[in-house]
Image 1 (cartoon, rainbow, N blue to C red):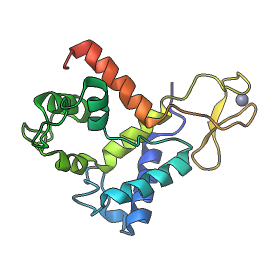
Image 2: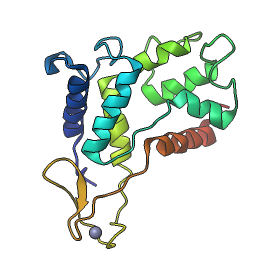
Image 3: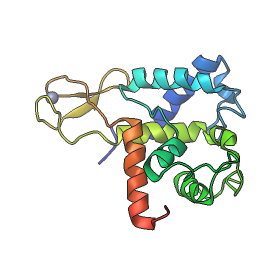
Image 4: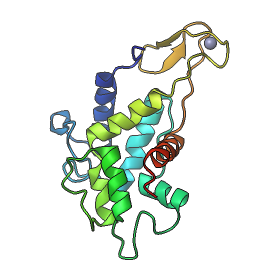
Amino acid sequence: MQKIISEATVLEEVKKAITETLTIDKESVKPESSIIKDLGAESLDFLDINYRLEQTFGIKMARHFILEHIEEMFGEGSAIDENSQLTDKAITLLKIRMGDSLPELRPGMDMDEVPTLITVQSLTSGVMDILDSLPEKCSACGNSAWKSDANVRIKCGSCGEYATFANGDDLIKAWLTKIQNEKKIF
Ligand SMILES: [Zn+2]
């Protein structure tokens, strides 16, 4: 199925949310930029960035980072050890999630470094995952006639209702469950 909102459009909106939150030039925002390390965001800025994206797309971004979900699902200490370092299992999982090529993802990584892994591209992928949860049919009228409105909200071309999506935290949990079933990491 062709995506109603393209990844390029989402990337543009993510850049916009970041530049408006951090009041920086759009030219300095690259897909591979670390939002903390390269663009100077602090943790509180993510609330603002996420809020803007939620308003723009009509979605709910994840409130909790993946490490918190791992600890909740697989028990305390499964993601972070007593020295606040990531466990080998957590590293394995993050590599599956974020790619194998990140040099930061190594045994003994401190949990405080993890947010620096969030890039413009990974935030964009997070939004795309949520948009991909678009149900086949409109829950209000049962028709399958999604289109985007004048901006980037997806609405029903038949009755005009806005689409609803899975929230970001539920999608992370579903992903963790799937990977655990396949690879039995924990
Ligand atoms: Zn409808």
